[in-house]
Image 1 (cartoon, rainbow, N blue to C red):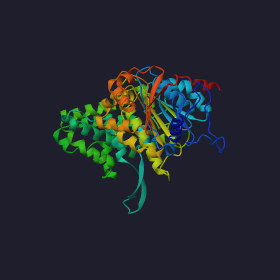
Image 2 (cartoon, one colour):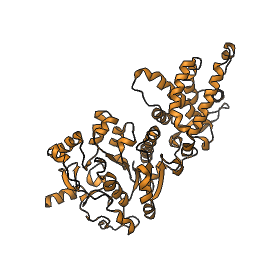
Image 3 (cartoon, rainbow, N blue to C red):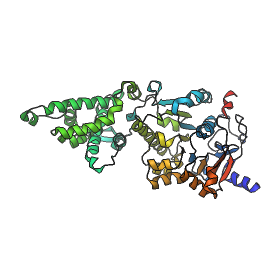
Image 4 (cartoon, one colour):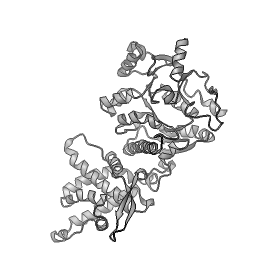
Length: 469
């Protein structure tokens, strides 16, 4: 027993009060009350009477958790909500149905947190999310016609590409490659034009859609011209004007890549089909308010002050998938960029991203690579699944295994998936049947550097009493 206590202490794992709603024991600190809850003494709850320090430098762990349990196993009530209640750093919480924001929002505000809700289900209740606001800029010298040079802000084209690649994902059929690449070129040119030319308040995807509709109209006019009129045609009016001012502009270059297809009506029609599918989500009037205007949230704020960002994503309606994927991709991108700009290469305020129902709600490109490098930046994830096999439906087997391997704490709350049971049994040194017959009040906790332990589970929502204190 003493040996287990020493092992737990060495790895930053401590016993806590077992009664739900009771105050957690606090370590002695010489810091002021405002500074007491630092990353060095903060922790997260993984089971009843068990917590893990969030200080990765102290524990030697990477801070990523993998929580696996079948529907109704208590993933949200027994893991997400307790850690939401005790958190002292920023968090991003998947909030399907919007219940967590309603239930815990006022309490978190009382604790000094800023709370923001991005609601992809009820957009009229959501903060504005303008994906173009998160495209990074850099400064470049621009030489005018009189020979004078001045610095000019330019948008990073690779950030535009990331958005477009998620709006127009790769097709499985290699014969579709031409249409995918052409559609991406169209949308890239329109986004670049909006960013370069339009007023900042108009730099959003609604403007991109409006510009696309104007593009279609002008191409239709061109296709109905006589041969001689087509020979004298100057091109799409707004791109032609931009080309006069800046022939090397990225928007113009992308436009040139597909404008030769205007003459072939069937070819252009097929390209438009892909573009229209990608931009269709921005047509719906009830969603325009979510994307129109400048963002009322800033991902970078998460790394500067205590903030909880609730993200409501439907678990039954897949129409917003491409937008949600862009949202989470930009979240990681902006946080990493913010950390890299700090002298120490990490965020001032650590951020934990709770990816609840990960397999059902979001696909993050290159997540196997992202999770491998974000720990040092004080960005940590909690991946919550119903079974490990769900990961392989999203990522290739090697990538899925990399994601699993990068979670130093694995929590199994029960389930009937054989692959998951085999994996946990192998780590625990027991039979898969023992894992699959796990009692409802028990869970397996596997932490790197320690033996797997079967411990008592924290009862779902048992810590809600904290809000009354």
